[in-house]
Amino acid sequence: LTSEGSWCNEGTRAVFCYAPGEIESSESSWRGRIHPDDAARVTESVHRALHEGDQHWSDEYRFRRKDGSYADVLDRGFVIRNDEGRPVRMVGAMADISDRIQAERELARMLAAQEAASADAEAARRQLAAVLERITDGFVALDTEWRFTFVNEKGAQLLLRNHDDLLDRHIWSVFPEDVGQPFQRACEEALAEQVPAQIEVHQPRRDRWFENRIYPSKDGLSIFFQDITER
Image (cartoon, rainbow, N blue to C red):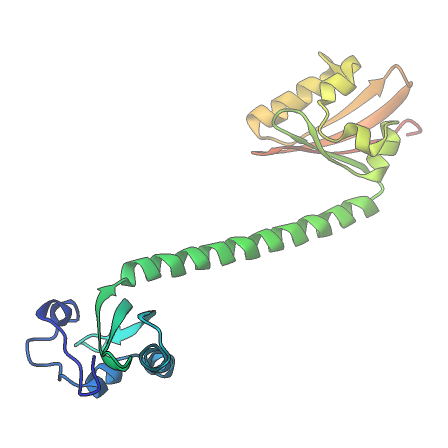
């Protein structure tokens, strides 16, 4: 690129599908193939490199192919100056980076979608937690390792435990008296067979009766329960 015009080799023409002679050797021809949204920025950055003392120049922009589509390119130049420091020409190389840019855009899209999905999922979890705190039944959620992942306030009251003392604890370690009893068997069968279960059990230690409705999923169990001793 010089004040008189521009020149590109056959390799540059081949990348953008132009036949020899189809790209005029002029600055306006080069500039006219830059995407309209990029043209002013790229022209300004070249002008700064030529006239403000920068020796090296690089920029990424979109360059029009022969078929009218645009390639993402990395353009790097080196300014050659005369003894007086005035620019004589800029030489450099253009590389088609469309695949990399497309990959970056796709990654950004996926990350944005993932972030949005995470935000939506977190909002849904908060809404569900609020609902579960309002119900009169006790509610607990267990993962597939039998650890408490959620306990509502009513559930903690019925279990005579502090909410924070139950989370992440193994249910059969917290309530060893249920090991081998009908409630444990009902939970294990529900999880294994992925079939809901309902069971009424007596707690001898407290002399209370509880009704339990057990709902399995691939992630564990959701259990609604209430004290039915009076009934």
